[in-house]
Image (cartoon, one colour):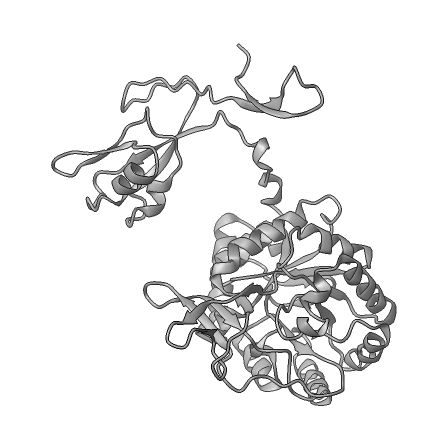
Length: 439
């Protein structure tokens, strides 16, 4: 059996699946249920300073985006950090860690951007026996308006400063949670690195308004006739999260910085993809809120079976394996050629491939009078739109052809003369031009 044991910045857990800082980790009751279900660790919902209480809205806190089958694909929330007293949270964290010493318990923190505030909260968290802290520099709503959360995460200098304060005042590993609401994710990651961060976690939620009530013309969720922007999460944000994780993993300045991957992890495959792009473990929220804590059991069994099939002994062997294959566009091979192929035995003659190609692409698919659809290779540019709109999995595939190869279906010769991106000889200064290969 594959070994799913995870060690992340020195923090050990029986598997790489952690619950992210969110409503599922807001109290002892939830966390104990999570550990009984099999989660390897949790990041306790964000604690604030011991002062005026945080007050959440008492109306709807979530807006949602659904797929055609009402499957939840995106969730917007306007909930703030924990509204429970700091001392109560600390007592519960201590009790949970005492009873589950083999599970990871990391505490998310957010206090004003002042050194004394951080120096005050760090020792009381450390006393609980927690394994580490996560600095919440990502929350885009509510707390950001108070100069915390993403208001800090959008300023690299603040990230570096607060991270350094924490490293100087605690023995615990420091994980910096990054906001995606920024132009270049590499800059805050580099700032965390300079501040001495042990790791980064990303992504936090994305600024969003998911919908508008067209009866009262207010954003949803609606509170007494008004709405506000919130934080977007769930399966829909996964592509954004994967890209940002990869950007950090392949940046020479942060390539050795451990990453905890967050953003739409719903299945074992999602987790494996995050790890392949450089994440040492993953954090989950929306999937647990949608399906309950036992969803982790499917993640554990699925990842274990995949690793057994591939002969992968430990999760560490997955981490970063896809990073060398992530390139900038100009480094792609423009002489690589594929053509679409339709499996007539699987085709249900719906015509979606034809409509998509004829109306919006390259008119490379023909339709006969009896609705037989065929690809014309001389017009096909291999965009694979037809593959993506086809409702039958495997019906349309992309076949790779070597330059000069005779296509047996059409008798055409594939030239491969698509050109290369290179430095033009007449411009040695380095302007990139699309030129044809030399004979």
